[in-house]
Image 1 (spheres, one colour):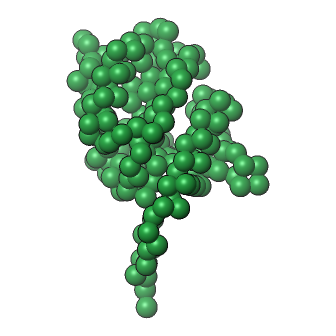
Image 2 (cartoon, one colour):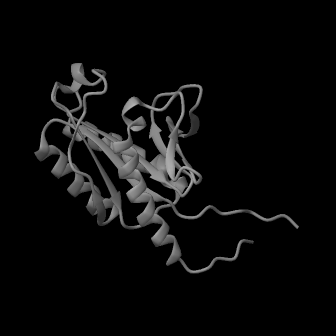
Length: 183
C-alpha cells in the first residue's frame, strides 16, 4: 500500500528591505489584512551587506523581519510570492522598487526563501518563482548552518538568532496541532 506524506504546515516569515518606514508600515498592514496577525516583528537592522539594491532603492536601507501567527501550507508560496511582487509594484516610484519583500518559511529543519531569480541551487516551484533552502538547522549545534550560496546577511548570528526565536514559536505552535493520520 502506498502512502502520501503530507508536510506539516510551515511558519510564514517575511524579510523586508526599505528606506521609508511609512512604506514598510503600510506594506505590513496590507499583508496583515491578507495573511493575518503578525506574532513577531524584529527591530530595524541596517542593511549594509551589499550595494546591490542602492541603484534601485537608494542608500541607508533597513532590513526587518516579521512572522505570521497563522501557519501556512508550503505549496501556497507561489501565490504568496506573486502577491508580494504585486505589492512591491504598487509602491514603486518611477518603475523602481522602494521596498523589497522576501517571503519564505521556516520548518524545524530549514529556512526557505522564494525568489524570481534562477540559480543552480534553486528549485522552480511554478509561475516564475523559485525556492531555495537558505539555512538548515543543526540540532547538534542548536543553530542554523549556512551554505556557500547563503546571502552574507543571513550568515550573521544576528539573523540566525532572530530566526531561532521564530523557530521556537513555530515548535510551540506545532505542539498545538491536532494529531494527524497520514493516508
